[in-house]
Image 1 (cartoon, helix red, strand yellow):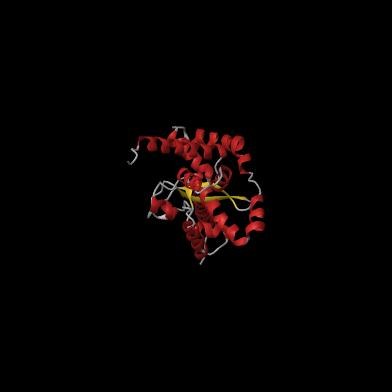
Image 2 (cartoon, one colour; image 1 turned 120 degrees about the vertical axis):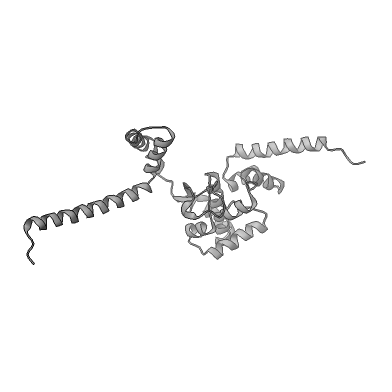
Length: 235
């Protein structure tokens, strides 16, 4: 069957246009997943900037302020976790996510492993990851922890259960939404204080500054004294 050069040219042109369209759609889908697009979207919707102005401002913010933030310390990774405000039962694909920093390895880990062994180091790492995510406004699931530490989910469940038996209420996504907002760094700090831990140990375990930990304990003592003063003594 004879096809004229003109018709062949038109067919090839349509095929190329179709391929270009597919490539453009693919790039757009990838763009929608990027942090820069999320920033442009926020600037456009929340601050009423035009798309062009939002894109320009996002580039300046990224180049001037976010460039150094990408340089993570040794042993630290970026991880995308579920926002702490997302309710239980909501489909994962519909949940808001947060990009957080997690410490996989630190110099203190060497001391813990040397003094207590590898099993206890994993025990401490699970606690550290949970509180780091919580302090950044996100929650890790047991599957998240298993992925980050290259463990089985069943192994993570056992460690979480050990923490529960030891009186440590870890802010995993399951625990947080089962128990509610009562699982907080303040209540955990007070619980540790009542168990006789020093402020330095408490600060290290929940990843808060010494000043913050001492403030939590001081506030608790003030409330305790007021309650004790107003409670009538039994005769």
